[in-house]
Amino acid sequence: MKFVTFEVEGRRQAGIYKDSRIIGLHEASNGVIPEDLMRIIVDYPRYQPLIEACINGDYELENVTLYAPLPRPLSIRDFYAFEEHVVTARGKRGLGVVPEWYELPVFYFSNHLAVKGPGDVILRPKACEKLDYELEIACVIGKEGRNIKANQAKDYIFGFMIMNDWSARDLQAQEMKVGLGPAKGKDFATSFGPFLVTTDELPMEQGKLDLQMEAFVNGERYSLGNAKDMYYSFGEIIEQASRNVTLYPGEVLGSGTVGSGCILEQTDRSFLQSGDKVDLAITHLGILSNVVGEEEEYGLLSKNGRGSF
Image (tube, rainbow, N blue to C red; front, side, top):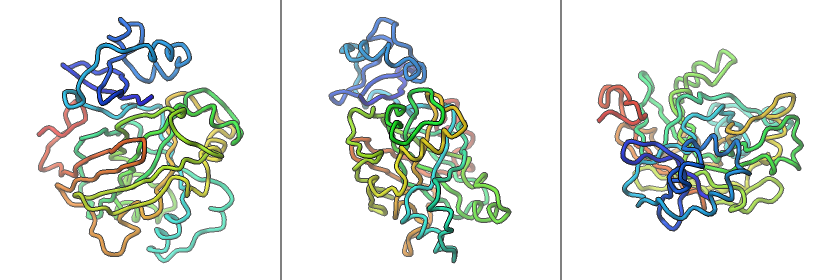
């Protein structure tokens, strides 16, 4: 299934995307299914047969506002799992790949309270001159687990969605010289969506997905890769994340950037400017679109997280 969080007539709720339409699950089930997708994920075995039976309460896609499928996930861990990106990005800074990268998958925690969705304006941080997108795929944990083995990890994944790990490259480079981070270079925005697609709809072998990944800026393709090129599988990522730690439904684990999946890796591209439109496309997962803006131009964010323009 393709889950969404959407708003219609001032009411935000969970739904599924089916036959080019959105079905509001709460109203289609006469109030039995919760409005919040997080609550559905936590108790999915209970709600799954009810969801599969929902056929009413649908809306045209163009008549609703889509949000990130999980507007407030419990946490975001972003890994560093594509070798091509690591080699190229570090090489741009005159660095090689440290041997430890090949020993275990590493991650950082991002800001789970700065999540953006389809159509949101991404405000470039003040003093940032090198704003970048990062084309990634993220999995959402669907079942509580601790010390999960890689070969068991698929049972703990609820689904996958597109992730844009926005990066202020100049701020990131400055702060990481200290030996911690990234922090302010990342924490202003992470985009998810438009759909959260359950694992049963996706081909997965040994923890890897065969899905084409593309990024476009103002309609021009900048990036092309495939999720199957991950050096570390999602199984290995989940094993590392859950080592001595309990993972809970609604936590998000990002893959890291696919090879060629950001401007930093490219030699003939300028960093993003105000007004640029960024589209990330992954097979079966849809297209995630955002536009870059400036705080001076758009002002403060409105309550729904979109620019107040």
